Image: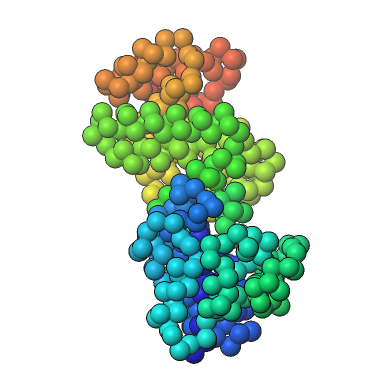
Length: 359
């Protein structure tokens, strides 16, 4: 049999990984291709990865004909060195022809790999195109085969930078359900100060939830996600909302980022918890009817660390002791009084909302 070993972080597995695997299967006439997710790449920090279990589950979701996942490296633990994996497969398939798939971006570093000469003697190293320039010295030195595949412009790093189209829809659903990669995505979307605000809001929301015997996880995630689209331009926001029938005529400016956040999280990031999403959808405007989670998010957003309202320390103390009393004073000071001082004229509905919850 012809068997290929395709190692990597797969963090997360993207469309390009499967395209490369299909190219290799077809061009090398493979009987089997094994994806081998790394436990830890010696050239990367372990904190760069989501858990082994998540990465393996996402891989399993997108496997096609002749593809399997090997958990050899993740089960073994420790640093993942290719020589160990190659030896494992050589022992498992002693009479079969083995290929090791690597990206052309790794060619320049091949001579630095642990026991590279032994690797080259045990398997045929196959280099797939990553559309980069590199010296051909290592190709000849280690007798590599260059795969003439079409370049597929996908990468896990692009995904973590917020290009969610890099992965299949079912993988994105899994990511949203398990709240994966959100920190990386948020960092790419937001300024440092706004990202810090997300963290501070999440931390205070979790504290409020704990004091009120509510889901700390939901409160934390609501706080972490609430301002994800805060720094979008109005043009980008209204363009995004057009398909939902929302525009300048039926949406006020202060409702904009809470609304784009709701729809982006629900339909793009595919976060499934409607209670959290509904709290985010009204975290600026509030509503006449509010869940306890929505109250927590509103308070946390307004008086978390980094906020400098007069008397903010006292407001935090009150909110931690009594959520509804905290809501009253925060609504009064940080919403009603603050907007009045700015000369904001409320709609009848907004005035009714603020006055219902204010002290």
